[in-house]
Amino acid sequence: MSLICFASPKGGVGKTTLAANIADGLQRLGHRVLAIDLDAQNALRLHFGVPLSDRVGFMAGLRSGGDWRGQLRQTASGVLLLPHGATDLRGALDLAVALDRDSDLLGAPVREMLAEPGLVVVADLPPGPSQALATLAPMATMVIGVLQAEAISAALVPEIESGRFLGTGTMAALLAGRLRVVLNGVDLASRLSRASAEAVARHLGFRMLGAMSREETVAESLACQRLLLDHAPDSRAASDLKEVARLISAALPPPGAVAFPAPPDHAGFERPLGMARPPAEAFR
Ligand SMILES: Nc1ncnc2c1ncn2[C@@H]1O[C@H](COP(=O)(O)OP(=O)(O)OP(=O)(O)O)[C@@H](O)[C@H]1O
Ligand SMILES: [Mg+2]
Image (tube, rainbow, N blue to C red; front, side, top):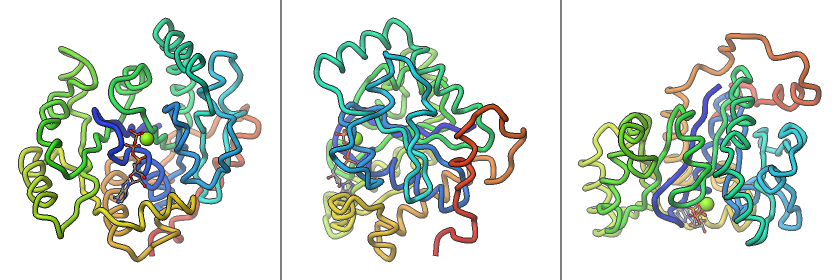
């Protein structure tokens, strides 16, 4: 029903961290959330406590067919997860070629996910341009461009602002309207970080959705394979995260506002989808 993509022209800026924790944040606000990992690093699953040894996933098996519903994992957070799955260099290259030839290989299952009433799909994209981004961006409700609060971000603002990293020409112009930026890793004690963050915020205006502070608890939560709101619920980063989740939630149809009944023929799908946390258990 709604698709939120986490993407960035730059790697290592916190896309996966934000995708996982915002998915959890939206779930806590009462949305039914499916998080999908489109990056061959296969790291999104770690935030949800899936063991390192568990290497099976949706994208890695995409070329051999099979229903995406069969790959769904119910995580302890309530968020449904489609891990990417482990792949080697050959597998990753073959998948890129296959997606280039037929973008519906990914587009068709994602359209099916979006046809599920009330479901919010949160997608973690690889850094930079990718087939997955080209396929998903036109379907997205919102593309969240993640930037770090550092000097190089200023150079990336025009890429973000123009929508150029989502496409070219008219397509870029169309998609630019769906772009919002989250500035990650803000260190209020650092003059440079603060100045970079302020400059980017000033320049982006309404396109800047929120900011998240740099904090040890964020990296720690990944090391413990826990979500931030479980690991350090009272931290500043957790409060930043809740604010961003609230703003995203406000742009989505309200939880529970389902326009159509769930399709009856999706055996095994209704149960996990029905396990969204009730709004009463939302943020403390
Ligand atoms: N706000 C933060 N404070 C402290 N550490 C952070 C913060 N955000 C992310 N990190 C850490 O930075 C590292 C990179 O984060 P992450 O993997 O989410 O980035 P990414 O953009 O998904 O990277 P890639 O481009 O490789 O996919 C991780 O170790 C993560 O724990
Ligand atoms: Mg990542």
